[in-house]
Length: 429
Ligand code: S3P
Image 1 (tube, rainbow, N blue to C red):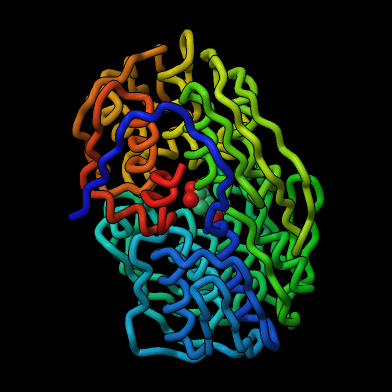
Image 2 (tube, helix red, strand yellow; image 1 turned 60 degrees about the vertical axis):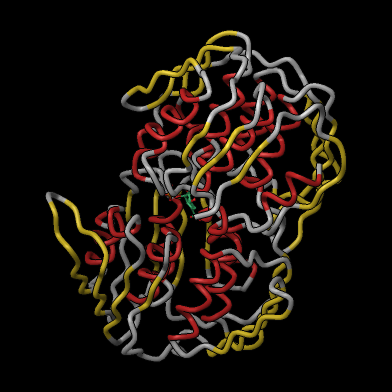
């Protein structure tokens, strides 16, 4: 078990690069494995979650080479190129891997068994199982109450297209259905109420798949091969978020973060912090491989509490723990509602962030679907626990920068799932 010790900061200064986007890295491996020809990925995130995706596709017979961790070459064999494996696929801690790959496995004419760690086995899978069964896949798993959990056995093939209205705002469910749709003859479509991250749609379009977005509806035509492509993965805005908040709350800070993904379905963190009064500039925007990226300049600023609810929630779904940290340093009350989905992430994030920030002195109240935070709080030195959740560990580390003494965050190995090198990068600034 590793601990991270964070000392109070007197100002964060410098220029940094953030590791590659986790969502885009997963999708590049998956879609590159289904394309015909050699796909090259630059800026891949070599975190435990994304490496789990690589291992799953290797077990399914795809040759994936990795140089210096961040460059990947995939020898894609097209839509019919996956091979049956007798081995159990293991996604580790990665919800994105299990939910997205299940869509692909639903389209394969063979049986695959898949599981993950203790946390994955507690995360609800009915949200993907229901539409995939509707398309014709046979899926069994561990059934409890009204839900189904990993390990899953997926007996795929012979899919029929469906039109699916998403009951929850979830990019993972949307992606599972669209990826299964690649193996169904005709158009499979998904209709969203609130737009969740759209990297699957953008990447399928970049690879030349037959995909169409019309307002809140995305349709894909299946059984059509697409070609390999080159993908350049931008820095992960969900990882950058920790450093953006750090520079915003620590006095005398000025931090330039280069080459961060600024896909509008992910930039809710910038909108929220702007509304709180943060000094953040987004500069030098470019579009590469259908994904926008930019440099982000953050200066320390006086923050104020705000209300957060509604359609912005899917755009900040992974950033709510670090927004809670920002709110503890803001003048007034911040109220976050409509965020019940946080209860079924890597940990119950409404419970874990409240519990851990309280140990540092935060005035934070857990609601059924959100949080109420009153600030500003002068954090005191404390020992907190990651609760096995990478985003809780990193949020607590940033809170530690604003504390009066040393903060110890216990059990920080989980940071490897999304942000290898986080501790070193934090120390460097
Ligand atoms: C992700 C979607 C989100 C997010 C997760 C990554 C993705 O999950 O929380 O970290 O890459 O599609 P949901 O689809 O469950 O909201």
